[in-house]
Amino acid sequence: MFNIGSRVYSYNSFKDILITIYKTIFQRFEKNKKFKNNLKVFLDKENIELVSQARVGCYLIASYLKENGFKKIYICPFTNIDVINALKYSGCEVVFVDIGVETGLPKKNDLTYILNEASYEKIGLIVTHLYSTQDNLEEFAESVRGRNNNLLIIEDTAICFGAKINQNSFLGTLFDFGFYSFGQVKNLSTFFGGCIYYKDQNFKNYYDKAFAKKIQFPKTKIISKIFFSLVMKCLFENYIYNFFSVYLFKISYYGKNNFLYKFFYRQKFPNIKKNFDEYSYKFPNYLDSIGSKQLEKINSDIDTRFNKALRYYNNFKNNEVVFVPEIIDKRNKFTNAYLEYPIIIKNNKKYELLKFLRDRKIYLRDYWYINNYKHFTFKKLNSLNNSNYLEKNLICLPCNPRINLKVQEKIIKNINNFFEKN
Image 1 (tube, rainbow, N blue to C red):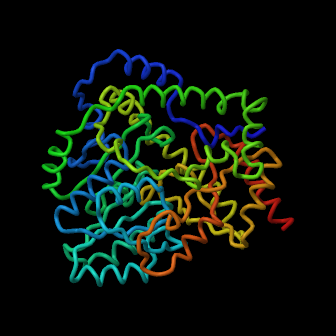
Image 2 (cartoon, helix red, strand yellow):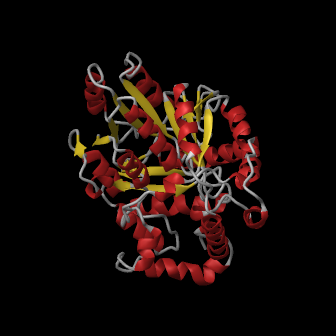
């Protein structure tokens, strides 16, 4: 039976969780820079700062840009709603642009408009790395090569820490700013946390000033997240799943409007907060050692994930009703750190496919992201047809190191069986 833990797997081991519980309760808030220094060495960049969450990094960057005259930021709405909320709280004007289906980057026509606007106005553009490849990143970089200082590019690298291009250039450090997430299910996890890369040296002064007013991360929040991790591991990463947890998923998909479904798919039913207390916290320093430990094995984990994504790609690349982001096995050039591997169903049968898989006890999630335009009143540059299309047709396949070949082959076989019958 397929273990849903292959999808919701927490990258912290039971040992990590128990150690973190101890440190959270008994260790004082002390300034330990080991993790930050290790990040600098890994990314080969000096301008790295820790934040309590990736959204806080996005908020700080947007606030800094606004203070320096960059009052408008463009972003594709097919993304995590917390990123858009961070822009909203910064006070910047947010404008939605559509996404290129084949690239996961801003659509070419919209990018042309943005580049033209930057000739007379200071603006920011958030590039979300969803399924970036060597070719489409090189094409994007060439498109913006002649930009002036009126256009600053921020990379949202929350889901692919460690992805790199041209062997040594990490996504998140290619342009002006970048931010990463170290959340509970990310490939480098400290339960909470993230970091910022910045090219502008003046940003450091802004960061130091902002964090002088921030408070330590509440230990109650950390403890609740840790115990939630324990529950997740007990329910979804062992044989309890086969006898109990699978029925929770069956219940949640019944009608798709009950409390369990809303819990599993918060993106679909967002609770847009009226306040932003979470933006006032510093990185919890007592999680420093957890981050450093996970950083030691990140390269091997990325290689494992890459191989799993490559197996999906090789099995589906010739399927005429499926679009898969191209993967070329040249890891000396480009390696994406696939948290999950997306495939796009061309014949609008995504939900039929997911139901077919659920009937065979394979639970892939209904949504990766959604078109968040519907939850805000921000302007849009043009139509957002591609963002709607991805919401309705994109599914994700698990790539984490715990999933074995047998499980992968079962997923591949059943997806192929579905298309043979449909």
